[in-house]
Length: 297
Length: 293
Image 1 (cartoon, chains in turn blue, purple):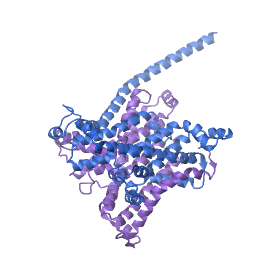
Image 2 (cartoon, rainbow over the protein chains, first blue to last red; image 1 turned 180 degrees about the vertical axis):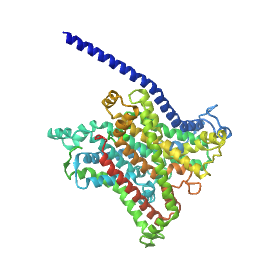
Image 3 (cartoon, chains in turn yellow, green; image 1 turned 45 degrees about the horizontal axis):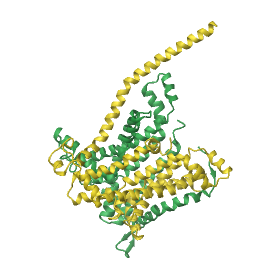
Image 4 (spheres, chains in turn purple, yellow; image 1 turned 45 degrees about the vertical axis):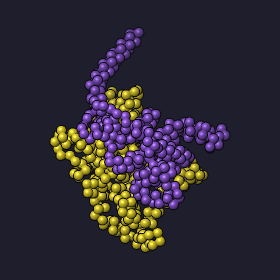
């Protein structure tokens, strides 16, 4: 009885020490926390400052911009945005960009899914070499491929079509998609495949009914990265298009030289290219970190 | 490591992917090889010149200068972005909630901006007449600032833009590594009374090894291929001072349509990138995911 009481007392004693230690760590945390938060806020402020400056420009007209430096738009105008939304030469640029980006994402996923499954589940002749060759295309300088791809696509009559840009972007998006998907797929235990095959599933049926739902986060993240790299790339997109499929980013560069630099209009167009990216990030925010680690965390 | 079954029928699964990438990569690459060993006059007249273009390009002062410039640039990018990215990841909130979501969205934002818009943002930000930072340096600080004409300022501007643009990638990768560390490690460190530095040095850093290897690989290669952003910001100038390898290559290939020299240059360029990718790939295979650390 006595020993039990001692044990209880000892237990309480331990709790007190624990509580004291917790309070101590909470105190150091409270001292550390503001510093960390201040650091984070300072970084985010620096990150947003150039974007804010562009936003500021987009809400002013060109005369106002050229005559004085204002930290915020004193009489904000939406005329730059209005021009973009009413002039087909401008807004069709966005339509074109979305068209080839979506097409590219679909093609990349369609060919990368089976390939990634093969890499994650099987050994086969030349698998390591094939995987490395794939990665070299992710690392290949676009500038190297620019002229020959242009000539090749011209010969095929693909210039100035959505499919041309979508296909050209698979050069780096397919390797990236295979890499990310393989990482996510390798996280799914093999036993699931084996059980399904014993239950009489065929490979295609197993893949669509059982496997895809298991890696849907990975598929979403991969789609996000295909979207991202197709959306930000300009060298191929500009070279392979003339008017009918010209991306918004290229519309921007050409209008700049033609209209003698309308900074307000240019800024508005730039801000509008940031919006889709921000929306897409929001949807994948919980997986984005894992995705950037190529599914390997 | 997951055990895999040996089955060559897996080739059927990778075949569509292989054909598509071959269509995009092999055919153009063969064209480049073809150009690099010939002197092309027009569609029907071409002479085999062997390795002449390679010899000429390797001796070219402009190419050597661009190569040195590129290595210095990529080296500086790694030296600045990797520590900075890790520091940012350490101060990012690790628990869920709106603050974490907001931080992730904001940090990732520069990565989703088209590359020429990145250049445009920095033109608008740095111009001494209308740019916030340019005006601040030139007027408020009183230091003459005109990045399009002063080589060192052009250089620092491109570097600053690159750091702004891509440090988020390193931060997100490092953050992914940090989030994967189980709480038990931190609890054990607390019981041992470990300092914040010791926690970083002996728990966080080893656990981030895998993701940091990916970060170094991606940052080195992508900075080595940089084209659009400096092209918009400085156009490779003043003079050749910010002409990196891709800018130089496009100048020769598209600007001067000198396909022989461009072809030889392309092969040299590609081989350098390939060699580095191979080394990094080997390291990556060995490091794995950092599970063993």
